[in-house]
Image (cartoon, rainbow, N blue to C red; front, side):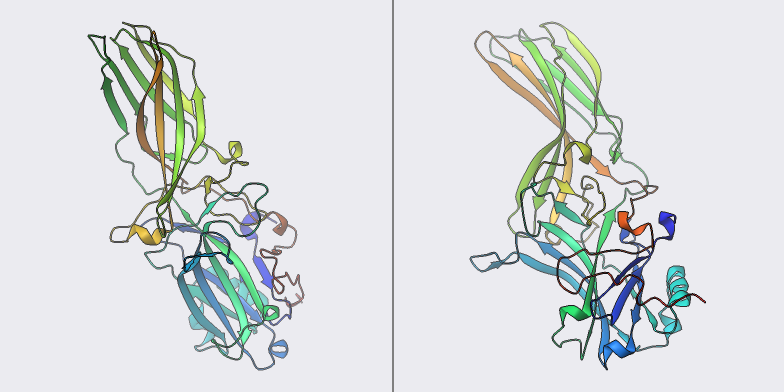
Amino acid sequence: MSPKNVIFKKICKDKSVGVYMGKRDFVDRVDSVDPVDGVILVDPEALQGRKVFVTLSCTFRYGRDDMDVMGIAFRRELYLSTRQVYPPLQDREKGIHTKIQARLLRKLGHNAYPFFFEFPDNLPCSVALQPAPHDVGKQCAVEFEIKAFSAESQDAKVRKRSTVKLMLRKVQYAPEGEGTAPSVETTRDFVMSDKPLHVKASLDKEIYYHGETIKVHVNVTNNSSKNIKNIILSVDQVATVVLYSNDSYVKCVDIEDSGDSVSPGATLQKVYKLLPVLANNRERRGIALDGKLKHEDTNLASTSIIREGVLKEVMGIMVSYRVMVKLIVGGSVSHSTFQTNIICSLLAEEEMVFQEFKRSYLKGMVGDDEDEEGNVSGGDDMAPKEK
């Protein structure tokens, strides 16, 4: 089965409710966001008169659920929307918004009902801070989730056996058109030196896609009496938790220790290459990722893009990148560091194909995302047999 034909399927433990979706990654193009759509399959006998609801939620999690410091909750719900899907409140055909819904309804039969959500303009994209290998519990993250459940009413107590959850991911894609290529230059004067050191650094463009090499053009004019002993370049990821405390985590995601030197009165013109990718940072705690679904790969977090009129405080975790050029200046007594920074963006491109959930290839089904009771795959138990 081709990944394009995979249907993500998950069924609660008491078999009363099942969720079917064509994808779990939803694209944010700044001016528009893919809607969330799917189908709920119900078993009227297992429901025993209960209703069925489906919710889309966005949650910011900063530490474990059981943590509480000075009355500050470490889990905040940024968005929650609930729909009743059974008994249906409108004609079933009016609830069909996409082709995948129509195909699923034809396949699953008369006990299947469509659902549809649109993301509000002010919601962040999925971001998760990578835990260390020994860390346990929930990670610091902005998470999206579809939850379907059966209950006597929307506000009634919900049993885990009658609940099914599916994690989603809202992914930032690069907007069309690119801005001016970043460039910065600066001059450094030294005591006991009549002339300064001049450095110019520039990039080929402003936006780089995941997995793309960043080329840094460096031009050094050393008119000083100091010796440049080394030039070190790096890409830093800056993740700022804006919802609570403005804590910032600066992580180097790629580095080039060139060993290049520039003697007094000499010049250097060179293009250096940097490649910030998750593959080289998988064991590093605190690296921001583009969300994380179990059994599925991801990227370094995309640069955060704030839509005009949206407060950055509701973004949860803001991510940016900078290229740093550091010159190690040697003298007769000591060494000093001279650096300059360039801001760039790291984003996903429109044509990128995300890797599908690895265990879904055989039957187009998805296993557990959570360890809670009730969030288990029902296999083909609820799917009608083909005639």
